[in-house]
Length: 117
Image (cartoon, rainbow, N blue to C red; front, side, top):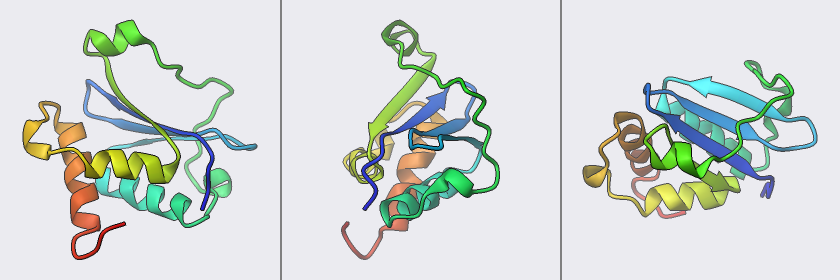
């Protein structure tokens, strides 16, 4: 299990960014929430994204900003892959206004249907 810190950032434009804070950082912007869940599961299983295609890391990472998040700019999830997957599992997609967050939660729920992790 990988215990590297990860940020999942859902922006108000509908996109989702994964930031992996390993020795060789990885950043990728997604439009498909199911792919985010698949990548989180791969990281949880010990696969490092540092050599994956699509690394958009450019020596800058987004840092959490309470004011921007509070004013509707982003929805932010952070922790290990397991912790983020657990956070998403505990959310009810029917109570979420943002489509990208709702779709991310729905993808998390459907990816684990039939078993609990």
